[in-house]
Image 1 (cartoon, rainbow, N blue to C red):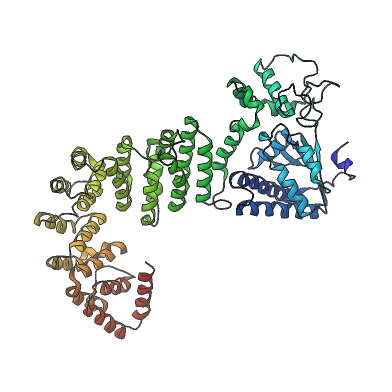
Image 2 (tube, one colour; image 1 turned 45 degrees about the horizontal axis):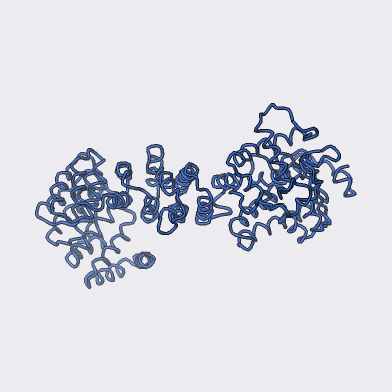
Length: 615
């Protein structure tokens, strides 16, 4: 007799086409939310806000479907959950572990009737999400718990454990008759489930094709045999480890391998934009790493974290990428968590970011960021697990990064790995070839050793633009006539990035004697070919170097008495910014005069001020 018949109901009406598809999608969402609730409750407790949210989504969804359908009978098998032959949960869905767990506990069908209450749905959800692998010897089985829960509108068809046994066979898999661990258990104190699984493990360990040694030991349907066979490896591992006593003592059971696999799979399955943000996912990963102490697995998890971080960078979320790994970094500090012994394996895994297989993707993800400045702090976090042996890979990363600020972060990490050894950095600059010199040069920019000047000057005319830019950047801490001339010469460099770095140098030291050279460049025809970021750099550097002396030319430009070469749509806004950057009374007077002459500038001026306040 089916559970539907025992519930006093006829078989559900057949549904076709779009109606079936709609029901399938809705029910899948219901049970996926229940699986998510189970995951969050296991990690953070049932009072966690996400746990409460997922339980609410499950109960509301179940009530809605029960009301709309009136009656639904869900079948469970080793491959998942179905409704009228349609897959609700299968091995392609998140949450299939929920169906597998219920099936392993003997559930073959689930019926939900119209009229089910919220309290009933919640009680069922709590039972369904229990971690049955951790049940102690005297704990209730699922069937008993369902009976105690008094579910009036939810009915479960529960098989007699995993098999049908011969009458009176107290040593078979179902020898306790579903009464829990209080029957004859050979004096071991095991629950019936553990007795059954241990017996199965012993049989399977003796050989897949060996015939059963005990009459009536098991007569399982093939689908049940398939499910239990998947448990073989885990059970045999426990038995091989000589843990007979551990099996008898539920408190001493090791971490369930299925739980660890489930958590590791969740790292790849979670949709970051829907149920967990990167920081919460980072917490989950910390729990996973803490539970998993085996070096090989820890290293693999570290690689998965590195891969996820690259994915978040690809999605233009550097802050999320850093949040993903930040919590796990605590495990690398032996003073903070000395109990964690797999820290070197975790370092190797996280270092996958700069290894040959991932470095190109890592650099590409950083290079495509629209606002690379936002990634400086996150990049430092991502690179912090690296050790001295990773210096060559860091230098290659520096050479691959387009943005000098991000390359500077990587160089700073590299400098720390060199213990700020000036001699070692200078040696690296001298030995580096081509773009590989970018990293050592940027590291040199943090040091004030006079010996650095010669090494940098030798690279100012390097064929590679990024090397020339890095050399100028490394010269920032130094001043000399030769350096000033090299900087002025770089204002005419063919590469925009080199010209902008030269302008930054001039803005740092603000030598008004260079103003005439800068003005000549501003009024030259070459300026017509520059893009807005470089034009902004030219005008701001000119204003900061000249201060009050820069005001006359800026006045002519904003009043259109003089024009710049080329078409620059946002020139007025840039000129207003430059006038304000002179920080002079003359600049204020010119701006007031310009607004009177050109009233449309007032709105632009207000917009510039607002942007300045917002940073």
